[in-house]
Image (cartoon, rainbow over all chains, first blue to last red; front, side, top):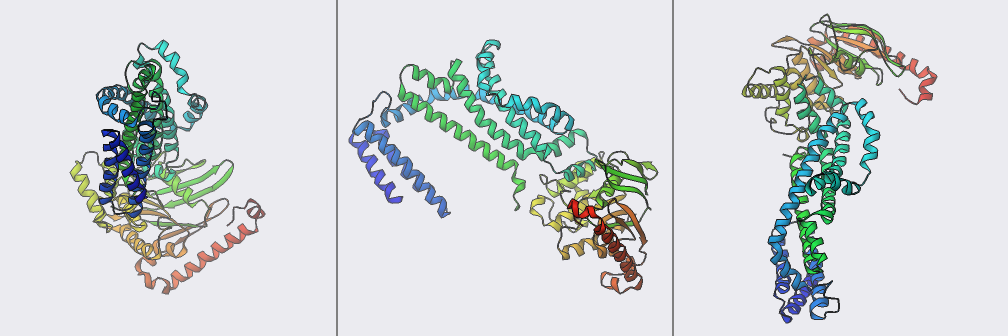
Length: 296
Length: 267
């Protein structure tokens, strides 16, 4: 793969320089350079190989893109803009997209925190009472399988603003995975552990926050990460329908004007944002569950 | 003092414990001995108030047990400690529930001293997952004796340990039974006859299906004996024989029951 990466690097840089596509040429240089620097700091051989492989795939993809859109433009340039154009627009649009991101993240954050704040207490309550669980289960079974997107028209009609409507829709989608996993988490705490807690005569609040919640936490986090992915889907879906700002709206708005270079830029940006947030979530999850690692 | 009067526990029409009458005096170390499935853990849970009897009652110091009994602390075979807290925090949680008026620093000092008492001075900040099985049980015992309950209930606490750790922890429990604060009352569930002979001042043998006390023996001499001299003593040897005989006849009785084979529950 190393040789392939070098060949792709030469190909992409040469092709880009030939057409004076300076952004594309820079990408052609920076990807192998970044991979090289990364491998210097990684000792594990398998991971080093993986880094080179990823760089080779990316470089190869960009080379193909460069060739069929700029050097031999065989594809329709309206739908398949040149690599150079997309890269240029990406940096040009950063400010607008960052603005859109803030608006999207505000909706997402509010709705997501709202679902955590309702689903976890609800799940702890329902999980700790068999009677309540039996009473709630039929409803949660039916409600949880309804795709929340179908609420969108209703929510837009009933709620005062687009923000309120999309927060409601995201909340209704993110709620169920967290709720169901919180209930399951409480139910799966070993009975002996609960008995052991009962014998300590803890105050109710202490019991909930120091035993029930952490006991269910691994399961809650599974649900929360599912919900996070789910709420991104719902957020962009909602924005495609009624928003006037935000990342989903950005893509739809540019598509309405036939500006497909910016559509692609927006899609790439959304991918990057979601990846970054998911990575951040994984870090938090590992930190919370660090007690499971047997070593210090 | 724990008193059981006509204690019966049944789950879904299956009688687990059948009219048990048993008294555990203050300062006694009672070993509940029986085959697996005979209901000895169930009996311990009723003592602790974790299980409501179907009929009859359990009295601790003359008062009927209703819900988790404050006079008792429990050590289980596993899952006694909360894995999401460091060992020290586990003790501090129990201590601050028992001594709400004490400051955090005092609670911390107490937790440290109890961990030291069981030989775990250096693991305060370690999570239970980082400890060996023996160390975890030591910490669980430290937590159980740190609270002011005078009755210690132990449910096959050393069942999952290797022989060396098991012997060391048996010695620890024997020491803790009579320490500077005077004698604690201990109820100890086990299926190991030798363990019961080494630890118990009294041994109750539970017969199976349904569980009932089929023998109650005093074991006054073993406490004066070190481990290596235990099975050289005449009275301990004869007690061991007697208990094995009772054990064996109970097992034979169970084998002769047709339902044992048909239900597949085994022995």
